[in-house]
Length: 89
Image (tube, rainbow, N blue to C red; front, side, top):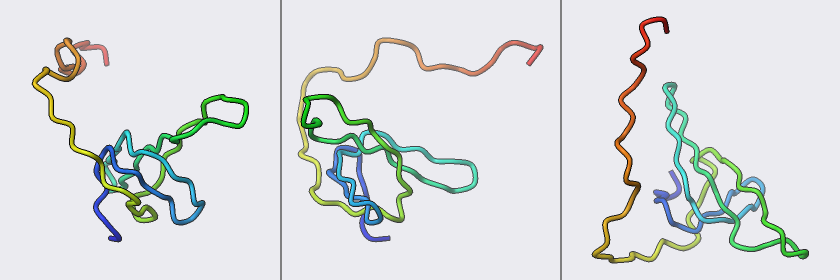
């Protein structure tokens, strides 16, 4: 593995050259791990560029994330989902 990607790192896809901030990570039952990269710039017209998902094997860290320290409680105020309770499913 080229480098260990952490959420918040600036990452480059070695196949396409796409660069963005790693904002999401997906791990599948079969072992596939993918990261969502959010672009750090806008189009020439000022529009947002869509994020894309890439396999971890083709990613390299360009810049490690900056640690942000905060006394604030981060995250949502909702209870985590517990699963399906519908007996018909």
